[in-house]
Structure formats: C-alpha cells, structure tokens
Image 1 (cartoon, rainbow over the protein chains, first blue to last red):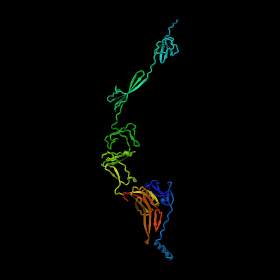
Image 2: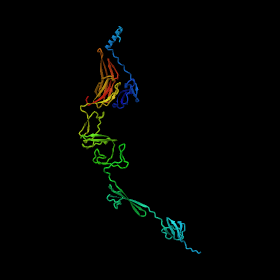
Image 3: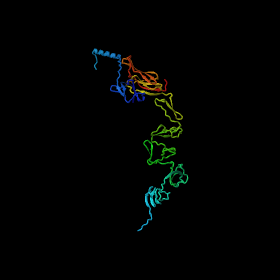
Image 4: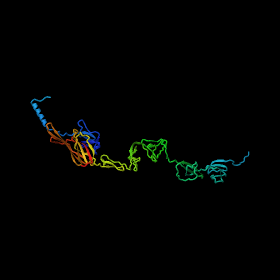
Length: 88
Length: 384
C-alpha cells in the first residue's frame, strides 16, 4: 500500500509507503504506470483514478564539442577531401 | 250397604304450599325443602314454619347448608431427631420459623365451618443440606462460547478442592464457590524471578482485568508479579513520548522509560516508494519536534546513479542536496557537472525545492529528475 503526496491540481508529487503516510494522504494499492512511462509524476489522481497528463520536458543541454571531437572532425574532413577515407 | 263418614284417614298430597289455598286436616304440602301436614281445617294464609305449631306439623326438615367460614395457617419446625411422622403438639406460630438444614417444616391448615365445626390438615417439608462435599458433574458440557449449560438431568455438582494441584480435576482451588467457567483458548508460562514457572491461561472473551496481579505476591505466588509491583502498560510505539527511550526496571519491578545516555537513535520517517520518478517541488509533512537532527538520503539522477549521499542537518536549517562530477575527456578537457536541490527543514516537515543541473557553465532549472530524495531519518540522542 502506498500514500500519495498530491499537488493542488491533483498531480502526484511523490509516493511513500502507507506506514509513513501523513494525515489526508490518499492510500492506494498500486502506483500508476503505462506503456509510455513509469514516472508517477506524469499522472494526476482524480476521483480515485489515475489520469495520464505528461509534463513538458525541459530542454536537454547540448554539450559543446570537446578537443577530441574537434580533432576527429578535422581528420574526417581531411580524409573525405583527399579521398583517403578508410573503409571498414 | 250403609256407609259412615270417618273423616280423612290418609295424608292427601297437595303439592307446593300456596298462600291462597285453603288446606284441611292431613293435607300434605312441600315448602322450602321441608314437608308439612296441616293440623286444622280451613288453614289458609299460614306459612308453614317450625314456630307455627297450631296449623302445621313438620314431617321432614330440609338439610341445613354449611359453608367454610375461614382457613388459618400455622407453622412449626421439627428437628430430625424429633421427627416421627406426626405433627408436633407445640411450637406452632403464624409466621414461617427458621428451619435448620435437614430439619422439617410443618404447615397446619385449620378450616372453620358455618355450623361451628372445624378440622386441621397438615403438610410437612424436609429442608435440604448445604451442598458441600466432593461430587461429580453429570451431564454438563461447555457451550460454543465457553459458558456452562445446564445438564439435561438437572444434576450439577461442583467439587471443591482446598488443596488443588495442576492435576486436580475439581473447579475451585481455594474452597470458594465457582462463579465463572471459561473455555481456555490459549496458555502461556510465566517464569518468576525465583526460577519457578506458573501457567497463565487466556480464555475466550478475556479482558485485561482478567489477568489479575497479586500486589502482595510472594516468590511462590501463582500470580504474575513476584515483588509486589503492578504491571503497567508502557507505550513505546514510534511517535509516542517514550519512543526511542530505554526501560529500566526498579526494585519493585516497575518499568521507567529513560532517555538513553550516550546512545543515538535513528528512525526512518519517510521512504520514497518510486525513486525512479521525478521529484517535483513539494513538502513532506513530518513531526520532527522530538528529533535533534534530520538526515536526507538522495541520489543524483533518478535511479541511474550509484551515488547516494546522506546529508544531516538540524531543525530550521537549509541544506543543499548536491552531487558534483568532473567529466574529463580523452584529451584531458574537464567539465563540471553538478546536480543540486535545496531543502528547508522545519518542525513540521521538509520543503523541497526543484531539482537543478549545472553543466558546461550553464544552469538548467526544474530538472526534477535530479537530486531525488530517497529516505528521511530522524536522529535523537545527539546535539546539533
């Protein structure tokens, strides 16, 4: 058994086990999941039912090229221009 | 043939007497159940009665009606030695006397009639004995709820054993009277400090008061406590005032909760049931008033990290759940990667802010799948 910590819009913030529940927390037998995700924060708990409501995904940082990346890119470019690219 | 009038020579029946009929000598009438003969001629208007001897002679008188006027009860006791089957001649009274066990009670009924006659009738009863002595239980059995039900033949005798042992078959162990009989549903053995053991029986429907404690018990007492102490319930459940304390036993056997000296108690207060999920900003409500310190176990990325550091801080403090990494590529270029989340610890719980990431000199906010709390501990017995 689990206890849900809900936001004001019924979105699941976190889950703990029943013995650690605070007053007013809904108690459920299973945590939500579907084919898309196991992340419980992608669901809201409304009228004792789970509603899948994914959140917008924050932008993923693109790492800047390292020195090795730049050396590899230069070598590849040179090989292509001189037709010396090694075939696998 | 010549005839001569010699008058009336036989009784002449005239039926019931009438006030208007003229009766003559030897006329025979019935009146109020009696029969009468007229003594005169021209007898009219005279009602036959015993007092009218001039006109009437009674032949047969009607039977007189007799009724019961009263009945009176009287009582008398009679000892076994004096009893011979005949009622006593003395000692009669109008109230029931005290009769000793085994003696006799006589009851006399005196009936008086309207004609002045009377007669006595008697009943006698033998009083039973007090029922002491050893006997057997015949026909008794225990009901479903453990109650004793009446035997079908009406015979139920409880044996009393003044010196019972564990193998005694009688009901009462002190010469008393059995009041309740229970079906024993459980049995345990209490070991006394003297080393001896006593059996304790738990019966169906038992309550706390059924486990009686003898306040004047001795080492050989059959009760639970050997030194005159009274057993008390001490609540040491998590969250109670005594949680985390140790129990000391006094000389009289009483238990006293004591704060452990030099010991540290760590209680698990909360555990993340879905550590692979994101952890949005939120408050975890907890009663932290009895704890000196709070520990937060967390991990860097939802389940992908082997790093699970524990931060410990006091009530009212802000803490940062931070994991830093230094990523170094093959040519030796280093980049700092850091996950962090701030939390505020109060007496009523912990307020967690959003997770964040620092990467390549950039800060990415609201990355809530970073710096995820796994468990929260309360720590007692230490100073901040």
